Image 1 (cartoon, rainbow, N blue to C red):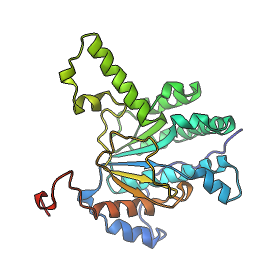
Image 2 (cartoon, rainbow, N blue to C red; image 1 turned 120 degrees about the vertical axis):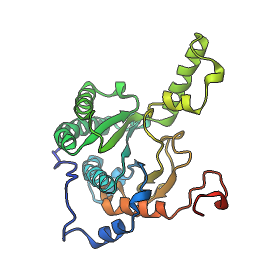
Image 3 (cartoon, rainbow, N blue to C red; image 1 turned 90 degrees about the vertical axis):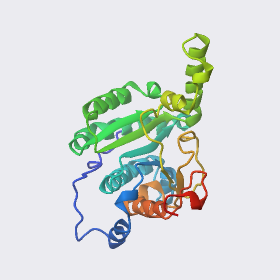
Length: 272
């Protein structure tokens, strides 16, 4: 199956124009730049159901979902988000029909290959988490080339979770620590939250402050279980192919209206 080429994922230089929807402008105006979450994670759900609703095959849903990646990345960058992590392909997704898996892998390679120069020009650093060794050779090659080319960028870090599940990551981390203890390289007294952070595939990334899930489902689906311990959760019935900048702005507006106490009482907060 040959997948069509999409236009560039993002042009982060795009200005606000008279064609920008008024609802998007209104939502963006309500966002306090000083309280924008540094890290937003998104479970991109609903591609298959979107395609079914439109009388198309599931692959069409994934193809149209590429535009939503563009919208989310552009919106996040516009308001100063520094890290955006997208749940692109879980370890469980390998169990889907082979034709769909093959098409997803082809879409991954084509999209990265087509967009690498645009991402680089816009200061996007591409990063991955997950068991990327399990990806086909073409996918691994395209990812490595893109990550090498964008390694020095610092405007925003776009992390793709590929062949990822939180349980896989936690199990890998536990085995790593257990091996070091068994072989005398590590004391059990040295095992703490900081060490666990360093051994997970998300090492070097701050914990997400906001987790978004599309399609109306209200589950975490084995995504960043350790890292989202204190994240705010925002669920929307919008299917991923219909996700636009206004939806990310809406999630951030809602996030900024919440009181994040981290176990404290309201009276203990700096500005109750």
